[in-house]
Length: 208
DNA sequence: GCGACAG
DNA sequence: ATCTTGTCGC
Image 1 (cartoon, rainbow, N blue to C red):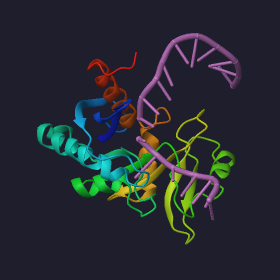
Image 2 (cartoon, rainbow, N blue to C red):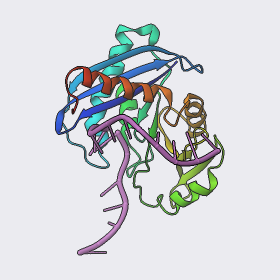
Image 3 (cartoon, rainbow, N blue to C red):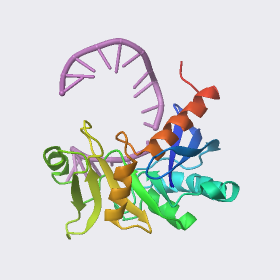
Image 4 (cartoon, rainbow, N blue to C red):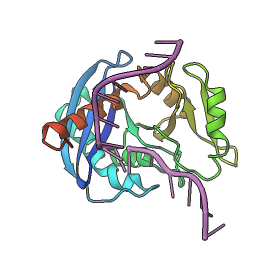
């Protein structure tokens, strides 16, 4: 089993949010557990410090399912954000991994600025990522590979950026994420996003 | 000073 | 993150 988490927000309301968690069977990606919960955020979003804003609430959901639904507790969690592909090599996925002492992988939809890694990457990806499964290593000036850009499925132009969060090696992480992708975003995270924002709407937090 | 900046 | 239906293209 593989789990995914995502946090949705309300426009103009920096406090109210909804955290969603979805657990899927592997590798079928059939969802076997879904939970969403309204939460109150206390910290602001500051680029490079996402972990300080979302890690606690995400970790709480993981502990919750671990105790309430032990038979649906997955082998690892996919987190929307970065792992060691981070200015200080410690993004949101690392925070969550340490707090829960469980394997995590960071999956970002856009490339966060990391000194030394951002050179020519965008251009290289557009030319090197041809078929599904193709990857482009994201390395530091010191040849240290801290993440990987992956073309998850056919048709998508923008890659997703994968990095180790906790108790994983990059190759295994990329393989795992790849098999979770039916669309650009791996199913556990994609579904967690859908259900969490759906919950906010049904609570009367929509915009129209 | 300018640019860059996960969710 | 959020604003958001139809629509162009394979």
